[in-house]
Length: 245
Image (tube, rainbow, N blue to C red; front, side, top):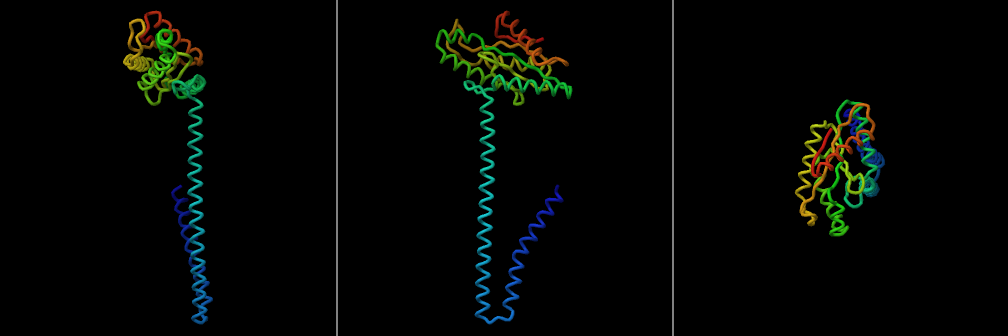
């Protein structure tokens, strides 16, 4: 690759030199026997030719720069549109379809390379009570605070999104069950620091999590079902806790 690039640069340099040398040689050939006035005319003509070449080259450079900038901008707009299309409109985290596509890819990768992947089903506690006591606007604020706290407690490589309603899902690549429980506890503690309108004596948000690690040969629905079973057990045990298995 480096050799090819060096050859290309050498060819471009040779072409640029030829563009100067050939017209100059032609001028010297024509002016060799010409009188001074005619030689001056040749000189003026050559200057005009060089100016014209320089202006055309400048126009081409500007056009190429503008095309490159337009291409970069189109790429950014396409990436932004794709990102928006995969996000939940209220919370800004990934929506259900993107989560399922991502989990399917991660399970396939885990099968292929033999590395672990774990998930956590996460429910925001008492959202219905917030809506009843303070209105859906307060519930929306609670959801936004919850998602910011939960997503912020996860790694950059983890995927966090809205599974549906007040239900969320975290996908943790290259993470076994022990590591996923540690991450889930980190999420729970981060959410507990977020304030919420007073509901049944509670002034802080809380969430309940069910964690499961993918087992070889399982499909996507099975690992989600195990995480949901752990989530339901945690809810029955009083909420604001992590259960794994």
